[in-house]
Image (tube, rainbow, N blue to C red):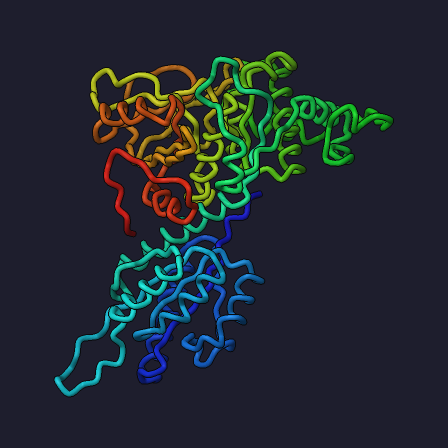
Length: 491
C-alpha cells in the first residue's frame, strides 16, 4: 500500500524587533486555524517546533542547524512558514535551503489601524515581500499563498493544493518504474531515454523479465507464494536452480481474488479458467512489484500474456490500478510516470487511466473519445453501467465530471508536462473502456498533440489537478508545464 502521508514542517516566523505579545497571539490564532484545515485533509502530519525555539517562532539564525537536522531526521516532505508579524527573512531562507523540500509562504492580513498614534504590531505582508526575495536569493523554490484572512477560502484551498503538490514532488523523487517486457515493435512513440530519466529526475527504470511473472504464477498455483523472490529478489531459472518445491495446491489468495473480481464486474462472458488466470497473474505481478519496490509499471500487453497464458492483459492492468499499483499498457513508460504523478495529486483517492485519443465527437466539435481496449479501473465505472469482462478486457464506460488530462514526454532532451482540464460528457456507446470529454477548444488540443512532443496516449484522473502539476513542475525541475488553457500559476 502506498504511503500518501505528507509530513509538513510547521515553522512560525517572527521579527524580534516587533513586540512579542501580539506575535504570540497571532501565532496561536494561526495554529488553531491551520490545525482545523489539516484535520480536514487526509493523512497530513504537522511537525511543529514547539519547545525547540524561543516562543515557538523562529527569528535567530543560531536555530537553523538544529531545526534543519530535526526536519531532515523526521523526513519532512514540505515546510510551511506562516508569518506572525514581519518575520525574519534570513532565517527562513537558510532553513529552507538546508532542508531542500517544497516551501509554503503565507501570512494573514493585518487588522485595520485604529488611530494615527498606533504602532502597527505586524506589517505581515511587508515581511512576506522581504522573505520572498531572500528565498529567491538563496535559490529556494517556494509557493506563495495570497495574504488573506484566517477564515478565507484562499487559505484552505491553498494548503490543500500545496499538500497535493508536495505529494506529486514526493512521488517523483526516486521513483522506480518496472518495465515488464518490450515495447511493441512498431510503437516508436513510446521510446524513452532511460539515462535522462535517471539523471534529470532520479527516476529508475527497472527491467522485469516476463519469465519472473511466469515463475511467480507457478508458485501461487502450487502454494509456494512465500518462496517468490527468495534468491536475490529474482524469479529466473538461474536463481531457482537446485531449489525443490512441493505442490501444496493453489494458494487461497487465488480464489479470494476471483471472488473479489466477480463482486465488481459481470464475469459471465469469460470461463472460470480464464478468470483464474486473471487472478493469479494479478497476484504474481503484485508480488514481483512488491519485492522490487516498484512505484508503477509499464507492461507488454500485446504478446506476453496472450502467448504464455492465452489471455489479454487489459482487465488485469485496470484491476492492478484499482488496487493501488499504477500499470500502463503498451510498455508506455512516460504514461506510467505521468499516471503515478496523477495518482499522487489525487492522494490515492481516485484511479488514473491511460487512454487513446481516438475520434472526435460526432456532434460536439470540442469533444473527443478517450478509449482503450479495457484497462480502466472498475471503480471508475459510470453510475448505472453494468460492467463486464469480455475476452479478458474491461467493457464499461467510466464516469464523467471534471477530469485532469496529462502527459509527460520529451524530444531532444526537452521534457514537457502537458496538464489541462476537460469535462466528461455523453456520447455514443462503444466497446472497451471509454469516456467522451469536452475541451475548451479541441482543434487547439489536437494541434498541441500533433506538434509534440506528445503521442496518442493521454493520462487522466477525475478531479481538477492541472494547477497542482504545474506547480509541481517548478519543484521537480528539468520539465516545463504545457497546456492549451491558461492554468493559474497561483492557488
